[in-house]
Each structure stands twice: as structure tokens, then as C-alpha cells.
Image 1 (spheres, rainbow, N blue to C red):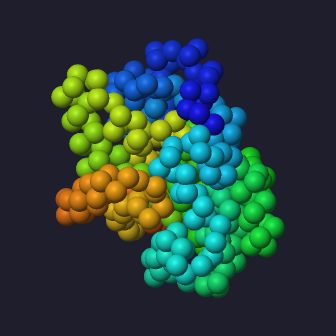
Image 2: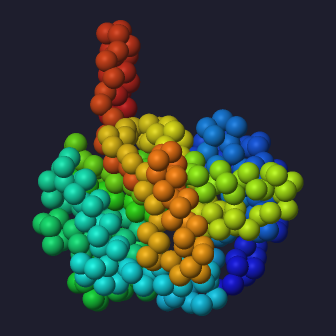
Length: 328
Ligand SMILES: [Zn+2]
């Protein structure tokens, strides 16, 4: 799929209708005017997001192409998804999943796991070797078929939010590269929170909006009065609706009754990208500076259900009263 066929319906969307995907408020501040969309920052919750947005069919078609390694997609990403198929120790994506599982298991030993947006099921396959009993859901039917057919996993087609509530709770729920794709990230986090067992862990990985790459690309854009957009067009892509940094993520998690217990910056694994040698070298140098400045281009976050806050006795009584009234 080529980029111009995406957002084919978006011409009708007016910027006056731009609405924050997290807090739903209107009237955002314009940050960048790019070729296919604008980048806005919410004045209320500070979340950065794209407008107009591609619709669900367009995004589904894009992912079909990306998983298939369609050469019409970004050349740098041509082999990116090919690392999603092979459960082998040398696969950089398997190595990353093992590190993430190390972090999760320091908080919660292997138990029931739900991977939302599980793709080909590679993460669930790695987790199963370590004793996790996993299930998955993914909107890309081809990827989900691979999870079932090749890895023999219990994976359903569709969106997590469309699945019937079956009462099952999970010791860990993971959202790897999912939150930035969600039309309503707060609703997704709240739904995931409801499926977490007591003391369960929510794992997230996502692009970091507050990265050195973004700062450099944004500075070039402003210095050229909006003419140099190419670096920003690599960072802001139509399949990502929202761009969080640690503070906007913390605030959105809090609204879903979740709190961060661990977070760290990470970088895109350059082994997965096809890049000309000078670009690769330049990115390596930038990543080294970014690491020193804690401005990496990705975030890895573990969260848990928020601990109830200590509060004055009268206030606590009121809340309990309301709770029991709701249940009666
Ligand atoms: Zn907002």
C-alpha cells in the first residue's frame, strides 16, 4: 500500500473537529503541518496526536502489507515484521521479549497472560516456554492465523474491546506497540484494567514522544519555517494516532486506575531496519547521545492497579456508601 491511498476519506475531516483521543477535548495547539496530516498537542492533557486519522479499514490494510513485507511500504520497514515469525534465540525480537519477560517475572511469576495485539504470536510463544499460559487477540487476521497455525496458540481475530467479557482475569496483560494505535487509548486501558487479576501486571511498549529524534526533527521544522518535514514524517506515521511521553502516559494510566511501577527508555532495534550505511551510523551516534540524556525513542513500562490512597475518614465513608449503592 502506498501512503497516499491511506487517509483517502480524511479530506472530509475538518481540523476544527480535532479531538484528543485520551481526554476527548477539542481546540488543540498545532505543532506540525505534515504532508498527509497535522500533529496537534492537547491543551488539556498535553497528549500529542494526529489529525485527521485513518479509519479502521485503512489501518487493517496497512498492517496486512507490513506483515507481508510489501515493498510499497517504507523501505526501511521492509524486513521489520519478518522478525515476527521465528522463535529463535538469534532473533532480536525474541531477545527483546525475553528481557521484557525478565522484568515482568520480577514482579509476578508466570501465570495467565493476555497479549492484546499479539500479531503473529511470537511473544506468546516465548512466554509459553517460560511457563506462561497465554491467550491473544489481534485485528490482523493473517497474523492471528500464523499464531494459531504455526505456534499452536489460542488467539482470536478482532479487537480486544469487541471481545465478550467472560470473567477471566489475567496475571499479566501486555500491550506491545498497541496503545499508540488505539482510537480511544483510555477506554482500552480501562478495559485491560478490568481483566487484570488482583496485583496483576500491565506491560506496555510504545514510541516515546519526548525523544532526541523528535527534538532534532522538530528543530529542523521550526528553523525552516515548516519546509523541512522529512525527518518528522519518519516519526509521525498515520498508523499511530497518539504519541505519549512518560508524563502523559502516567496521567492516562491514572485515569484508568493504574500506576507505573517501572519504566525505562529503549531504542528501536536497528537490526530490524534496512538503512543506508551513513544513516545507520548517524542513528547509532544519535541513540548514544539520547541514551545519556534519557531521551530514547521508545518507552517500556510496567503498571499495576493503583493502591487505594489514604484519605480522611468522612471522605472514605462517602465513597464506600456510593460503592454499595451502585452494587445494590
Ligand atoms: Zn487531551
